[in-house]
Image (cartoon, rainbow, N blue to C red):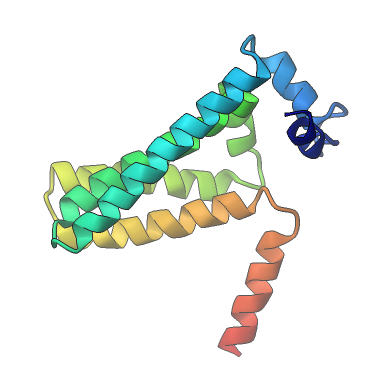
Amino acid sequence: MDKLKRALSGNDGDEERGFVGQIADSSTLSWSTRLRGFIACFLIGFLLSVLGSVSVFFANYKMFGVLYTFGNIIALASTCFLMGPVSQLKKMFSSTRLVATVVMLVTLVLTLVAALWWKNGGLVLILVLVQFLAMTWYSLSYIPYARDAVKKCVEGCLN
């Protein structure tokens, strides 16, 4: 456990304290409880996304959209156990992540609307693809220089 805490510690670009220090200040839950909550939510989200993906093989695109979207929502919420919901929201809506966050949240909602109210399987597939790309772009924003590397890779492939 201490090894994991040391691996996650360090300076955040916005704060002078380390990552673990920010976590400790943002919650009254113990480190092991937060870690268990994160792992449990992440695994539930992953399981829902996998179950949704399996439903594609049965041509049930609406079920796919619902399960995949709820899986992403729960997996995204799992990080609230690590950094706290307020800190998570602040980081999500920072200037570097704003566009990816808005696109991701809009496609999460539109995917559910397309599956549950409009009942349009083709639109669900398109929205899940956009949702996946937005979630990937959002996730890459947490890795230094990852977005730049992806941009250069795509430019290299297209040229």
